[in-house]
Amino acid sequence: MRTTVDDVKNILDDTQLTDIQIEGFVNSANVFVTATLGTKGLTEALLTDIEMWISAHMISVTRERVYKEAGAGGAYVKYAGAWGEGLLGSTYGQMAVSLDISGTLVNIAKGKSNAWVHAIPNFD
Image (cartoon, rainbow, N blue to C red; front, side, top):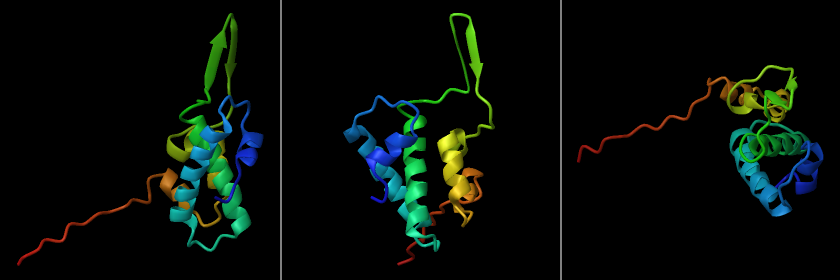
């Protein structure tokens, strides 16, 4: 892992998750960042920052959803900013995309990068 649980907790608004729960997201983010960006020539410091933001993104779109609009008891809040799907679906993911100077994450976020699997027939 490049980032730490404490680093991720520092950028989350107000998490109720335990350190063990956050560590699971950090592990997943590490696997993702290593697979997608590990060979793109980014510095270790930049990969660490991206991993931190991806960890927070994973948390915010699963366990602690960030709402675009919310209301209760007559009060109503609508959050500013553009929202999308995937990595663009949270401010944390948007920050990770912004930090990736290789352009890999923006291509993934916009559906321009795909993994292809080809079956090769055996004619024996």
